[in-house]
Length: 367
Image (cartoon, rainbow, N blue to C red):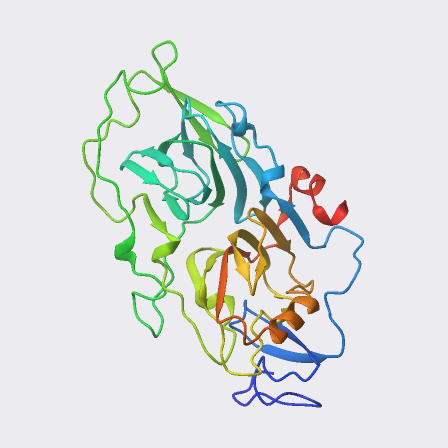
């Protein structure tokens, strides 16, 4: 049962996630690292297992997946994972959209892994670049005009995405909302943009769809707007990373936006923990109440390059974490590295995620 004083039984280190003396640090925790926890100290690596059946870790390289919008301007993103709260897609568009899109089932949050260009929205045009988060409200009409091939990781929530409530550090940490780029209105004239037979196509993206609406006037004919529901971009370079010198902090301190059952985090370059004996890599865990998606944007971890575009799925209840070889190297090279240089986007979902057939067919663990 929950207790203000956490209990200890058997052999345990004095400090949390430190001074393991050969033991393997395994956390069994509720509520995504914010609820009740049990830190279990094992003799062997709990991720050293072979799996049979559908509930297993999955690793795919985004560059090996072929969404239809990569080769066909009229195509769309590829579904990667889904549950009742969200759908996660991959887009790799080179040509501008010959139609407009409107996501009906929920808000859209997109991460720009590669590329640059602009999004035409009802709130005005938004330039995007590598490392940008792009937020598009539910049912907002928009169109993508890439400068060159753009890879987007797209998260569609069936609820609205919200900035998490401020914690003890205040409203400007881990990020300052004033750094968001908010568009100025631009009223497009009829005759501008993509038309076919004098009509503009607006593709409604929804469960059981799509549906297409046809307009004889430009759908982005907005002269002005006001309110607190609008599209914006925010670059990860403007994210303030919270750090500790004596303990590796849980993912929850890196939260960026959240919707019901969906939490999005940024793991970005930071000073490495400096107190001797501190474990610098995430401890083994089962994240009992959440599935985890990690998308590797780039960077390295203590001298080991991270494969850009790697998408890793760890289902809840199944052990995951850096393998023991990586942990041993981090301990051995403790004095050689003073910085963690990773760039990883993480998505945690309360409900189990179902991988698409395309993801399963490209799972690196099955080849």
